[in-house]
Structure formats: C-alpha cells, structure tokens
Amino acid sequence: DTAVSQTPKYLVTQMGNDKSIKCEQNLGHDTMYWYKQDSKKFLKIMFSYNNKELIINETVPNRFSPKSPDKAHLNLHINSLELGDSAVYFCASSQGGLAGETQYFGPGTRLLVL
Amino acid sequence: DAKTTQPPSMDCAEGRAANLPCNHSTISGNEYVYWYRQIHSQGPQYIIHGLKNNETNEMASLIITEDRKSSTLILPHATLRDTAVYYCIVRGVGGSQGNLIFGKGTKLSVKP
Image 1 (cartoon, each protein chain N blue to C red):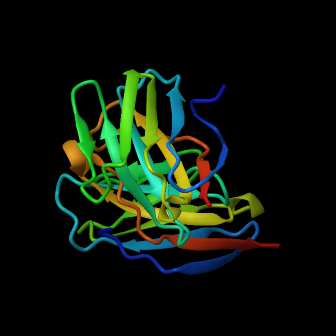
Image 2 (spheres, rainbow over the protein chains, first blue to last red; image 1 turned 180 degrees about the vertical axis):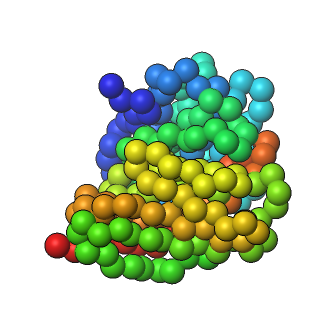
Image 3 (cartoon, chains in turn orange, cyan; image 1 turned 120 degrees about the vertical axis):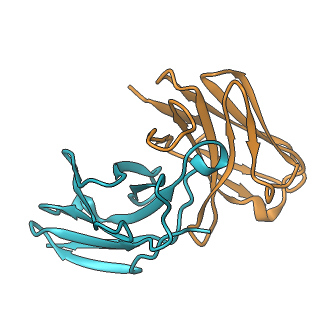
C-alpha cells in the first residue's frame, strides 16, 4: 500500500510548456508539501499546505502553483517551463504542520525540460 | 539555511555500528532533532527524532547531548542497504518553522 504517491514518475517536456504533477496520500494527513531537489542534490521546501493555510516559499517563482482539490491531493502546476525547472520534485505529507509530526515522502517526479 | 553541520561522508564496514554525528549548536529549546535518509533515487525516509531524551526505534538510536548542541545517529548493525545520504534536521514548531530544512547531509557508504 503506497502511502504517498506521485504521477508521473518521469516527465520530459519542452521549454514554455505548462505541466502538472499529481500527488495523493492515503494516510489521512492534514498537511501536504512540495519539495524540489536540484542537480546538486539540495532538497528545498517549496510549499506547505493544509485546509487552513498555504505557506509559500518566497523564492519559488509564481509560475509554480499548488492546487488542492481535497485534503488527500496536492497537485503542482507549472507554467511556462524553463530549463532551470529540471529537477526531482517530491511530495510529502504529515498529520499536521507542527514539529514532532513526521513527514512521509513520495517517490519523486523527475522533470526534464528541454 | 540548515541549522546543522554534518561531515560530508563516512564509511562503515558491513555489520558494524555506524555512528553519524551532527552539530546543532544554535538549537532552541522547543526545536526537535530529526534524522532522515535518502537512498539513491528514492524519496527521503524518516528514521527517528527527539527533543531532549535519547530515542530508539527499530531502525536506529538517537543520542542527544545534555546541552542539546549535538547528536549522534547510531545504526547498530549497518547493512549494504543502509548506504544513503543521512540528513540531520533541526525543526521548529508551527507554520513555516515546522518545515524540514535539509542541509547537505552525510553520505554513508557501507562496505562489505
């Protein structure tokens, strides 16, 4: 049983395109996250989101927008893709957003922008 | 920025204990110490966390010094499958302070 799943696993696309990455968790958690891991392997938070609050990392371009149809899903939509968007994107979830609550990560989506 | 300092790499012989150190000298009283690992091409995996007391679970033990300025993750009997990058993370309470801030981690290589 997959706790946090992401689709697609691989995504290859052209510059300027718009794409979405989907994330689903079956843990009943209230908070979900998106992280980006670049080519240097640095893993950075992009967004955290629960029913009450969206917390946006100020360094994330506004071409990136999280969309949550329900608390089990947090999709990441990217407009006007750029070469620098190539990275591995990880979704995660936790029961809440407080310290002491473990985050569980998905397997990642490998995005390559040509 | 990450609030922790870890050695960039370590080696460990298979079957021996792996002791991974972490310095977090600026940790606040309500901040937890978390350990995650990332096996090649996979998502980060939770290992253990603690606040003040030492902790143990089926994967590892976490030893936190009395002043809380450093900690050690212990894998008691390392296997080849424990080869991964291990991240020590100090995590606060609430809002953006509850987010995980990953540093560069320690690349642990377990060798036969």
